Length: 417
Image 1 (cartoon, rainbow, N blue to C red):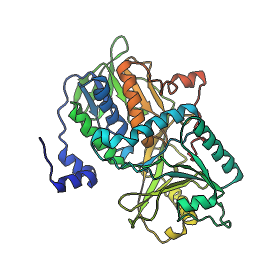
Image 2 (spheres, helix red, strand yellow):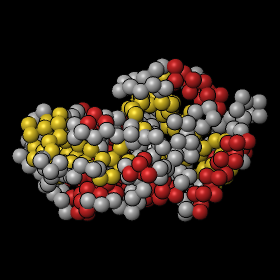
Image 3 (spheres, rainbow, N blue to C red):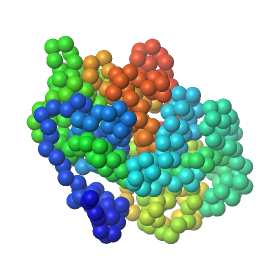
Image 4 (cartoon, one colour):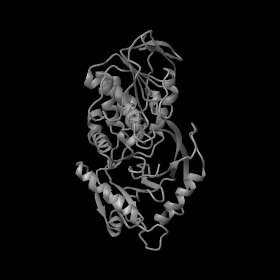
């Protein structure tokens, strides 16, 4: 049995990717696999885990061009919730939330899921109407959500400023108590360790450079920086760069890629008890286990693969945060960054088999990717194993863009991206 010292366990839990890489041994790829996952983030590693755990596919590999969790998994604001408006979205995200609740036990790895509550503020009469519509729709779907008065909102989150003199006064809030946060990279590490224990090969620094198709058009192999690997099934889960990978198979997807802004403050003692989001002023904030205030901004107005983005967007977001939470005005920003998000025309994901036999895709999450991680991985593994969609991801096919069956969560998701 492999053992670890207390110090090594702490490094693995908190040391970032460098500590993880020191432990991880990347195997040499085999000549052939029954299935290959392109992308070593939370969704890709989770898909490999569920393929092995629930569908008995053990001769599979995850190919990651860099290090595990080094893409959007390591660049998100860790929020988990399922209070989406439409039936299809609410079902998918609540499936994920239920898996989040037991994920640490299932993986035997602490992903630091914290159901501290997600509160969404209403600042205008229209906000109130829309938020109450969300509350009623969620309850009809069996998803918890409740309406709070401004006084109840402040009682739940004491730092919140509910003064009527604000430019955007708080008129109420919708609260999902089961929502919260988790540690983003721990999710990737947990899935990676569990998948590895089931025999999955997880290969870092292995970039896919081509997808080989046979005479019948079906997938036969992938070309990589470590050679050609034969496989009849390829699942692409490369957030931010899905279009690039899919183009290797001759497929063009209805996707655009944008930098999504975020930042963290210097660390302080625990002071912020929940997650607060505001659509009107576009700001959202929580506090990490390390004490940093984790603050989300918006997507840039232009398409890009930049992992930084424009500085003006976090500046506007901080103006809003300082008005809603005056006690943070003297805080200093520690760092800011941009994750690259794929977005579809209806701002809902694609989790589907493609017209290319043996090629599957999971993409287009926009700002919803992290919160969906276990649910997305679970249903995508089903789709790859059975060559058919799970009932939950059945509506999220490519054909909906042809048939006009959109799941338009662009505004219904209660955030302004």
